[in-house]
Every structure is written in C-alpha cells, then in structure tokens.
Image (cartoon, rainbow, N blue to C red):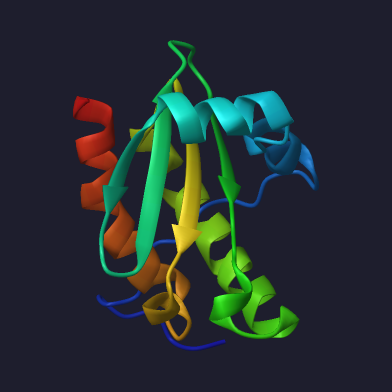
Length: 128
C-alpha cells in the first residue's frame, strides 16, 4: 500500500455490496429516453452529460459508452472509472437523473482526474 501524502485523496468508506449499485442505477428505458429527449446537455472535452431534474432526493445515473472508445475491455474500464467518480461526487447532486457519454479523450484518465473534471460540471447541473 502506498504511503499517504498530502496529495493522496481521501478514501470513502466502502458501501455494502450491491446497495449503491441498485440505488444509483438508471435502467428504466422510459426514464433514459426522457433524459435524452426532455433533459438538458452540458459538454466538456471528456464527457457529455445529459440531465433531467426529477425533484426527488436521490440521483440516478447511467453511463453510455460507444464502440468509438475502443474494445470491450477499454469501454468497461471507462465505465468503471466514471461510476466511481460519480459516486465520489454524489453528495453534490440531488433530485437529478444523469446520463454520461464519455468521449475518446477520457480513455486514459483515472478516477480522480475524472472526478476533478466532473465536479464543476455537476455544480452547473445543480444550479440549473
């Protein structure tokens, strides 16, 4: 285990297996379509974020990775990195459905780099 320095980001406590996954997932086909059709869009170099205000307390999100990013291994890694980044920033979000569409420039980024880039974007989403 590497030594902890000032540059090391804090670790969040682990959640029980599967609880966060079920709670945060946006899987209903109608809800996904509503986010794409009725929601708004914000774009940065690494990701396009579609969002729709639900008015509730919870957030739900989906990550749409396209084949343009690379093979299955690359797409799954990008998906994992973005899932963890969204969970790390979930405290700033309430009552919104999100769909993240990573772009080719996001392929080599780690979780903390993605989290750092998503934080200001999520603040804009919450100001809506």
